[in-house]
Amino acid sequence: MTFTISAVLLFGTASFFAIKTKAAGAGAATVLFLFGFFAAGTGAYEPIANVVKSTAQALTDLAD
Image (cartoon, rainbow, N blue to C red; front, side):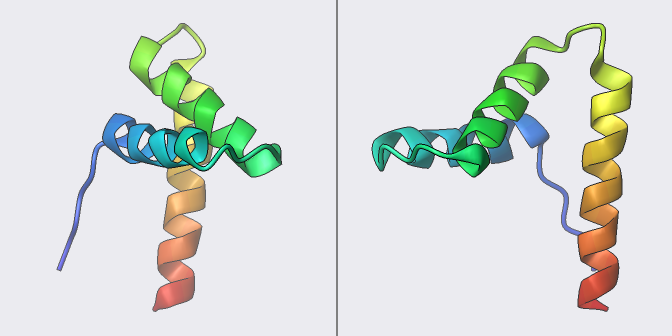
């Protein structure tokens, strides 16, 4: 079974919780960066999107 979720929705939700809990660290900074990046869709979209896709695929393969 395949489950698909938008990167903007995923990182937006994570950003909301990072700000709400006043989290300060590398993880929160990464989440906020990725949310802004996917919301804006800048010219660097392809390489960063490929890294995120590869990471998601690696996590999926670990679960199998």
